[in-house]
Length: 543
Length: 85
Image 1 (tube, rainbow over the protein chains, first blue to last red):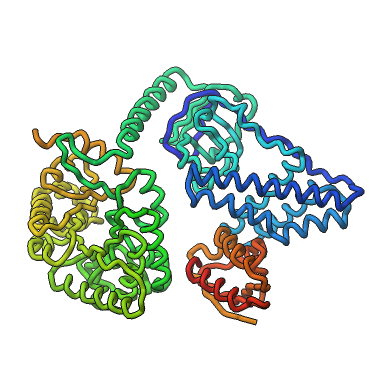
Image 2 (cartoon, each protein chain N blue to C red; image 1 turned 30 degrees about the horizontal axis):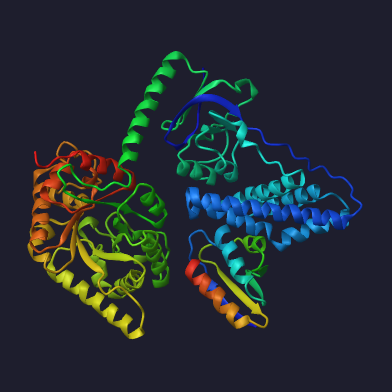
């Protein structure tokens, strides 16, 4: 048995014969040509055919993996339309009187070298794009035959690396998985594999040769292990793991598109928590019914100065547009405590979790708050946006915040800028003060969302980040559960909806308890959505 | 000629995808459009030329537009930069 370890790309398990991946060899050797103009038109034809192929690949990718991952094929089309690139190739053909293949290759090397010599790693990696588009043109020049993917049937592909365009052509009914000696988990290839759900391990560092071609192999995409010629015990163990994984996946797939409703008919909305716009495809892939907590901090933490209104507006607008009319609850900035941005120039505090943070910063620096609220209001015109204030401890804070929001909306009215006048306004219930006063606070807002992480830490007086306190910590502490129940009941008395967006929301041991309290919404990380829906659908509260 | 400065705020700088869309936008106009950074100049209608400048976050570029539709072209490019980069 040969064992190699690489990096996990997609947590699937594949068992089957290995097939080494072959690319057609392309000859780019230089040879003289007599009719240079004919050679140039041969190049132009190959170039246009390549663009046509990329256009088809783009459409295919759009359908299979979405716009973000399809974009690379659009960028490649533009690269093939670049005048510098085209002129360089034509000039070489004309001046050196050589064939198009050699001219394309020379130009590719030169442009790739230009990228490799740049000083940042992202630009250096673009050399691969130049080589990829050039290989496509060379392939067209050499008769147009790409890789014949039809020859791979029920196999695990072994390659040095796969180009994104190659990965996209893998038929998931026929390709069990792939293992590559190079590549990276952040490459387009890896992202495509994840989106397509192909078991894959990359960057093993061990190139595989013809001696393993056709041999039985196992890819464990959960641990990153690849077993070639596995022994009986390993094979039996992995077969079982595969069966379990399959069953788990089938169960989750069966609740996709279904309502989150108990056997006796009680409904709950299952929303997603997201930290930045990059998570949006994950929300959609996991069938989130909305976004219950969109943390706006990324805009502040990724920047070296305050993000502009326009920058924020674009990010919020993208979130609501991508969610296509489903609700998106955006929490206003929650900087402070464990999330610090230097340019805020916050004084060092002995106890930042109880210091100047979140809404307290917003109310001390209303200009900052206004910029964010303006961006949020403008984005509300493009979908179903709700705004949520964090760290509230009094009704007065809500009234102040709403007054600032009203100012912003009146200003927008004067400027004739559109916004949603019915945008919901809610608060996080994450301090014991807010939970205790929830009967009064409910009169001031449209919804509550209970942040169980902070609520637990403040109620138990146990620091979330402290170590060595495990013996005192109880995630299901009755005091916290009582506060949650009270908050839900007080919200309902005023006719507002109440959700839970902290980690407890995803705790399957508490799902029944929360549903009995009458919770209206649970917001959890995207991978937790389907397991939670499965749990909800198995409960019968009438018993 | 129309000219303006813009400071990049996107954490990734002018990376491949926005460079491509920027070029697509620029190609809609007849005017020639140059992008300058630290004395180096690129052609905004050529993707490799734009990428070769390696513009990073926080760096300021100068856009120069020259031609019959320079007003509209400068406005469109500026708007694109503000919204995407």
